[in-house]
Image (tube, rainbow, N blue to C red):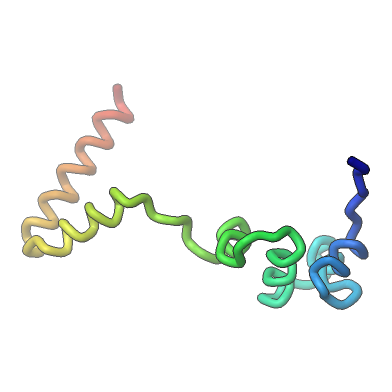
Length: 98
């Protein structure tokens, strides 16, 4: 398979963006816009959410266990939630010091 070199111009064409839409942010001459991120997703055949997560705009995907834990915490009374947080902090501290 032939390897093609990807430069800004080619990436902009693949992303269907105007000239400079990728190169200017890459050279820190402007901030990338949502249109640029969506174009990059299109060019690299990625989900837009994945591109936005890689850019740090969206939070990382929560693990299923994280959602379960949050659901359990929300079901507790505030007083008990505080106790759970204190216990978790103590466990983390213990691990950091061991």
